Image: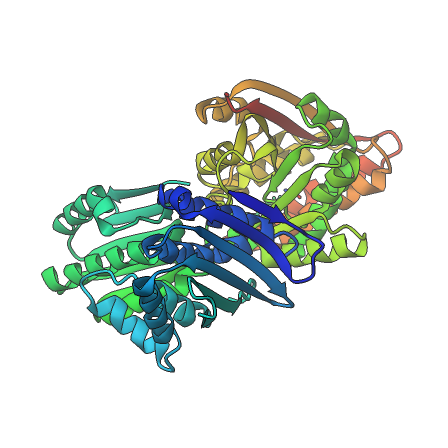
Length: 169
Length: 385
Ligand SMILES: C[S@@+](CC[C@H](N)C(=O)[O-])C[C@H]1O[C@@H](n2cnc3c(N)ncnc32)[C@H](O)[C@@H]1O
């Protein structure tokens, strides 16, 4: 696993690259990585703890999706960008055809105009937990903009842009 | 951070705490058992208390949904009250979905009334009291703190930081590697941030939070301070438990508290004494224990700490400008007699006599041969390695 943190860089604030084998060996990696990264990127926010708590829940959902669906060997890369009040996370995972289909479908669901209602319906009506729901939740709960970059043949990159209004009540 | 799910049959309450981030609901077999047991046991209302729930992933939330749905089906008359925290930013939005599961599902936000005296203490008129107090106590504490283990370069948290003036002084004197200052009152924090900006200090993290449930991982700080605040809570052990949790093993927790009935002055000792005895009663009415100071040792021991160090110091009119001391007492008079006693519904006669003791304390402080004192207990203890 490699990680770097540059507090001075303008956009890119954090990078982490981890082998899928290592990452997928332990579910608690999602929690650990998201807490760690959230604490780092939340420094100098007006309310660092509140920000870190929200950031961690966003990043954790993304990492959990990658954990649940990464069928090809390789590396998972996560990059955090900051621009003004907003943050952006890019999560890139190695993929085969099935993985690609999964992400295409999950991102399409998260981009529906009625994502908020759709999320509620899926969460409340489904008796089984739907692993795609994480992305919908980001769109519904945080008004995150979710996009997919499929330009590489063996990787997909999920791009999530969001603004955590840390002090809003 | 791990999690707990407990059922308190007495209050018909399920308390969720920590970070619940399971891979699948199947990991929560124990939790399901607790929930089912709770559902069997309750009638009338079931409280789902999420105040101390820091994280919940969607897999975990799905479990909650499943449970509430089942509860609505099995006991259609049961009121299900979900209590959320305003500090945990995602809770309100997420839990409000549960309302759609049935007409008896209520979601309430809880951020008030952590302790009964709260409304009084969070009044922004309290700010001048705190400011003058810190000015006086700092003269002593800057020398006392190193004896309790504070050194430059440490990671420090000041819990219940008030208007943040102590944090600024600590920052300048001890150059901590990290300084996090937490309080519940937004007005105080806004003030704190403004002061820090004016002083060109941007390294102090002022954050809003509940001292009894901090959004901080375990074992983070070398030195955790909590001044004049353990004494205002009706359940001090809850705060101490959190201070303990966030302190690193081998690190220390430092608390200061008063015993107001021991405030003293000459001349006019009797009137002064009477008034401060009444201050202690007044706090007790609001469920605070302003007599806590000497109890610090016992509470620290009971919270699991070792190596307790304790000392007392007396802030007096001779420490510096006697007018500073008089200003603090005047602020107390305004606050205790002008607000708290009024809120308690005291008679005009009582309030007049109550005020007189403060006036006499001021008289003693400013008298050329007078002496006036305010005793404080500083105690610290180590979290075992
Ligand atoms: C007596 S003041 C002491 C403030 C400061 N430590 C000082 O010495 O000036 C008590 C402080 O505790 C804060 N407080 C009360 N309940 C709290 C809670 N549940 N969580 C965090 N802070 C709280 C109040 O807002 C207030 O600023």
